[in-house]
Image (cartoon, rainbow over all chains, first blue to last red; front, side, top):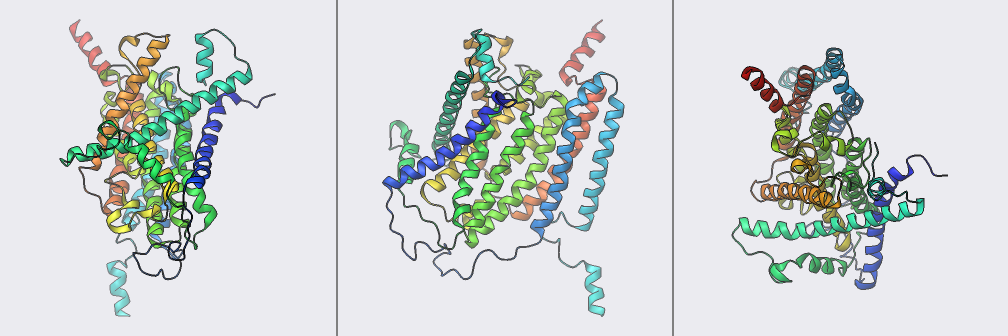
Length: 143
Length: 369
């Protein structure tokens, strides 16, 4: 009894197994060849000759999270578009192209509106995105 | 659907293989492909150095073996005999896992690459989706590598790498989506089969939108593989060497190998999607092993031509600034890719998926009458 699609997905499993075998095998084989003389300085993090201060796992600029959020919206959108894209040509050959085209257009249109909103809010700017806008700045000074 | 190398061989020799033989054939095929790819990755490092030397009027590696061809073996020996240091503050498990994830993601994409009409490891019917899915493991590997090192340079490089890779995945995915619109299938072999052997049948010249799409894909793919001019995660003048600062010896070698194989994969996918893939003129030698060999040769020739362009770009263009990088992705490539998607959808709808060449040809025939 073999699971469904066993022969189709077997190479995938084999390739992944091969990758693991390569990494583990080379590191184990290398263990026989390489020297192992750990020292305090050798095992410290590289900081151009300085003593590293603190850990690197600190707070990070919020714009990375904004990029990640926008990415997720676009990625989910394209993932949902794939099934439509596959049947699109068949539909248009059957003469139903208009309806599918306009439903795709509406779907993309919603996304485009969202992108324009993001853009106008300055979330697509990398540098200036979280500086205070001019109006807010002056308001803050008046108070 | 779902043709594999085993089903091709059993058709060719008209035999049914028992399950154990199937596993054996798959194992041998996977073993061969992985080793060929490792060899290509090694030779690519040599080619990179030799071509860069050529572009800068130097000689390049020429000591080990004829024309320095065995340089990558010497590098390999050097790396495997290097001491394996792990920073004591690092997250040791994730530190060890990161190169593995990179290599895993890259090697898993090899399963669906259409080397020829028969000799594809497995022609999944969701091949393109699978390709996009597993190739994003590389980004995870790069980010975890930077994160686990607990070094500031590595952390910065890893964060940059993650931001860059996920950003550039959007235009690439949308462009691939528009290719799916034209070809109407998620199987890479089907996409290639829809194309012709000559440039007029390629998807690159299918319509004006797909022509632009090729360049969007190529730029995005360069950024996804962290190749110059988009090599910000490992920008050596600012971040020492980015996410793999703390990696030494074989662990570093796996990052490098994964990168070079990924460039090959990216070029191969561009070949399959836009440049007619393995198609040879007049389908010469169809159904024989000779034909398959010619197809493989054609596929590799196109892929290596693209690989040369990638290396050429690396040694020609200066590195971008981070904000420029993000601006290009979000304000130029993504809107153009969305516009392209709508354009191709309209083209397929209005012209029933015919290419520009076919439309012009039909118009000429009609006007000739």
